Structure formats: structure tokens, C-alpha cells
Length: 199
Image 1 (tube, helix red, strand yellow):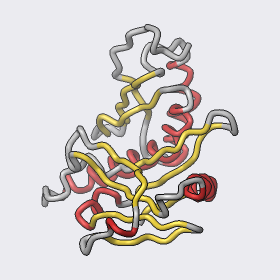
Image 2 (cartoon, helix red, strand yellow; image 1 turned 120 degrees about the horizontal axis):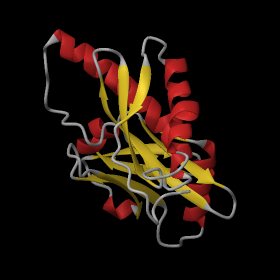
Image 3 (tube, one colour; image 1 turned 135 degrees about the vertical axis):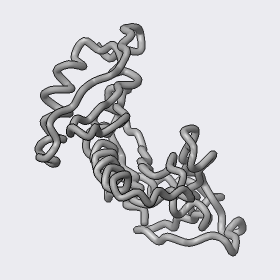
């Protein structure tokens, strides 16, 4: 259901050990299925567990999730990034913004959505965690019929002087290595250099 890395499990366990009141965690989503969706990890108590909850057991702690959130948390991952001084807990949920109830039975659309989802998941788990350490990330806009991946830089990557190098030597190389049928990655960001830019 939700993959929590060993580093993140150790971090969460120690966090709960420092609390007297809270013994478990809750994962929830605000505005699921929309572009405004936001995932949240919060403290919980056994007294708040409801019939519509499911319980996930990890090493030394439990996580509770309302059943209605489960489709949006499919393939979700929690990881701990950074060093001992600057640690950041990250929850990646690639399906949080998807309209789970919508269905398109057109074969070509289903095939296109399939490669889109695979590339989107790859970006979420293998590219964005590194970019997040510099305050940035990329979002997948489209996979064209010609096989080009169209992305947009956000945060610290927008306007960054190294964005072209990051695109070619980091992002494109990784994506094409894992998806050899694709032809390339193109940046469609309207870059604005400012204080938010990493370098």
C-alpha cells in the first residue's frame, strides 16, 4: 500500500517515542482527485480510530488511513531526505491528483495514459527526491505521440542557471535509460530567474 523506507520508519518511530500523548500516525489528503490535493501526515491516537479506517503496521508504530483515501495513495512512498542536520520527510503520492472515478475506454488513450503514469511515477520516485533537496521539482505535462516527454521545472529549478545541464545530464539520461522507446525530454518552462532559483 504505502512504502515507507527504513530511514523514514526509524525517523517516525523516534518521533513518536518523544511523544507521550500520541502513539500512532494518520495519513490524509485534502481535495483528493484535484490539482489542489495535498497529503498530510499527523499524529493520531487509538481513540480516534474509526470503522472506516484501515490500519497499516510498520516497525514500532501504526499508520491509520480512511478507506476513501486508499485509491489516491496507491504506489505512495514516504522517504527521509537530507543529512543528519537537515532532514526532510517526504510523502510522494502520484495518484493523489487523479480523478479516480473517471474512465476512458478508448484503447489509444488507455495506452497513452499507461506510459504517462509510468513516467510520472518514475519522476516522482527517482528524479524529484534529488531536485527537492535544492528546493525544486519537475512535473510531467505530456508524453507526445512522437515519444517526447514534456516537463516543467518548479521551485528552485525555475530560472536556475543549471537547469539545461540538469535536463540533459540528469533528467533525460535517466528517463531514456529506463524508457528506451522514448526519444527525448523537452523543457516547456517559462523560466523566471529570481531569489527562488537555486543558482
